[in-house]
Length: 301
Image (cartoon, rainbow, N blue to C red):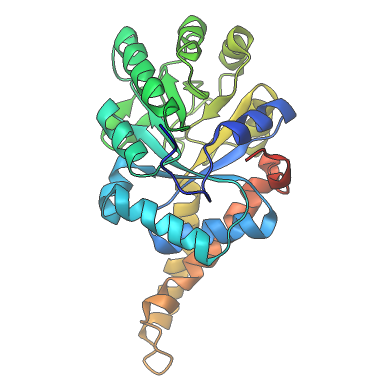
């Protein structure tokens, strides 16, 4: 069967594998609304950077469903004339059915997160997703171990990924693998000890395959750069952009600009603009030290 996603989208395999080969990382940016999506796409285009747009199941529900998200992304990419490689990715899909729904409605990449399941069940369901996705040229991410913190109601205690499980998961035909290496979703607590580079090294030695760092927001730059040098080729960002948006929006309101009736500071287009610009500024900073700026032209579409 042919691919279902639009000609402007690509699956994420080529970009992530190019990053793995050349020791940089692709930025995966979770989107939350139209402004968020537009800010990320425009920044990617202006910096010639390949990116992954991602939605959690919660964000999909918030924005009105899978069809709404895909339609919004397609329309923005056409209107803004986005030519850099962009993948539309399901983040932390909790079921085979959700992964298939996203594929059927035009997503070009999906994650099946069975890390909360017994490993053999995780493995079997990941394989089922891979078999379906490959029929439509859709890339697949899976997870072993778990990422600490909470994502859409699933709580992980931060279990480290096992190298032998990593090998078995790669053999299913997935395109990149998330593995617990001490990373955490959301803001990092004071007691956090940092990434476990020993475990990362053991996993990479076993598979020689692109790894994904979830919970990338808040990890010190030097630790992310070291992780990239050891095989991490995709870094997931959500909280960092949310905090940048929140800070800029709060400053606008505390300055009482939203109550300026003459300037119509209450207009959502003005109210959201500082946060929109903050997303772009923070994203530029992140992709610069991920090393992905200017890499769009070398990705095979």
